[in-house]
Length: 252
Ligand code: LP5
Ligand code: MN
Image (cartoon, rainbow, N blue to C red; front, side, top):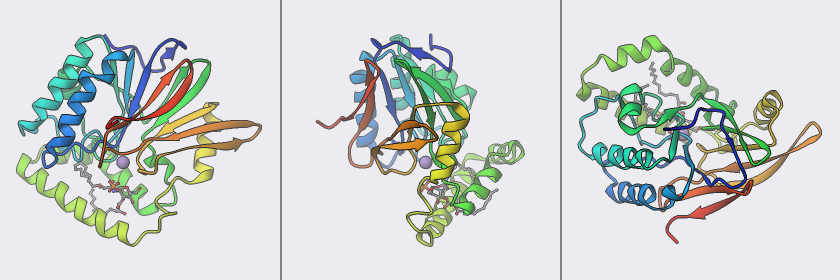
């Protein structure tokens, strides 16, 4: 049974964070790597937080591609093992719905979640909402997050949804080639603002695929930020234990 959102994790608990796996039927080796993660390191944890873009594209819980059964089975067995698996939607898989959650045992998180790790309030987010300089993306995001738009999209046949998603990927790729690297990164003031609002001392996010650990001054507080790595070449995670975090390369 998964713990409620907003959890408080004691120093002794191992808590894992992953994001930006972009699991894709075209890349079966990464699906194998994810299954190995679920059967190995994830089993040692009290909780696993998936902070968005688990899937390259999620076009609806009725997607009948058999490759997803391997992913669903792995998460379902991890949940059944007693690990609390939390899912936060990213910009690729915000259409994950109740049916997938029920099949996997995952608990859905809001776009911003604050948990306590050891004694530090820690903000979790995918990271896309912090990229406020990317105004074209933020407009796109508002459109595709609207319930009316999602209802309309999900009512279309699977083949058409696949086609639309592929078209959006092409449009996005074209749009990104005209954006600067700074524009597509986190905006410093957006990061500071959410830290201030949520009174946190630590932030963990993904999305930018620029793994780092750095420190930010927010008023009188030092905020530690961790940016998760993607799984394009190898699996990786952040592991919290005794209130401290370390980055772990899963291919080692
Ligand atoms: O994903 P990534 O990291 O490569 O790029 C993101 C931003 N792009 C996106 C778009 C997705 O990649 C497309 C696939 C989404 C599938 C969703 C599920 C299935 C269908 C749902 C359909 C809506 O998120 C990219 C950022 C980048 O991160 C860095 O932060 O820059 O943003 C864009 O490129 C968006 C463009 O700037 C504007 C959108 C172009 C498409 C216009 C079509 C409008 C259709 C509106 C539909 C209502
Ligand atoms: Mn993303």
